[in-house]
Amino acid sequence: MKLSVVIPCFNELATIESVIQSVQECGISPLEIIIVDDCSTDGTCEVLRTLESQVDRIIYHSHNQGKGAALRSGFRAVTGDIVIVQDADLEYDPQEFPIVIEPILNGKADVVYGSRFVGGEPHRVVYYWHMVGNRILTTLSNMLTNINLTDMETCYKAFRREIIQAVQIEENRFGFEPEITAKISRMECKIYEVGISYYGRTYKEGKKIGWKDGFRAIFCILKYNLRPQNKTQSLKVLTKNKDLTSIEK
Image (cartoon, rainbow, N blue to C red):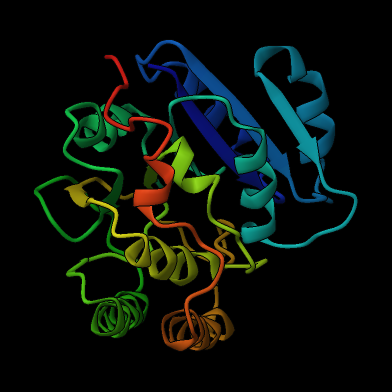
């Protein structure tokens, strides 16, 4: 079993080296690390060029497009059996990769969300209204997908590679989260949640998501759940020629 870690990155000079080191020390092997720099302007790009020999691949965007666009580039390049998203800050702990991917390894899940709102792991206390907004967005998403997630907006999402590469990602920014949730729910995937820790940061520390992204998320929830079925493949189609339960530990 090979785990591919996709790290979208934009202006994370203070944390990018620490994140790479933490991912390398996650305890999983073989491990593929793919970083997508979304045209950083704070020196992150220059640091990454000195680290190219330490990771499998770094993709450099010629202009800033957003997290969704960075993930789209990264997902195209992965070769592992399981794919997980890791933000380039220090809000999520790569030491918890084994917890997140375990349901896939056990053959129980096709997709796993790491929830910040279940379990007893430590959480930094930050913005109240962010939590409220997250709960509202998750509830609205659940109403239309008919799945009972507790944290739709979480970074930690793990997928069988065949599934994530079958999804046509359209959103360029943070709308990726409700878009991918809507599309995998239509694929009839087996979706699990596991509790994870969370070390949220403040805007002074580099947090980027804002209220405009919240309104875009509402639009995306409605758009991708209410429009007619698109080109996203069903899980049944994906399993015709490949048994998704054949991943070996």
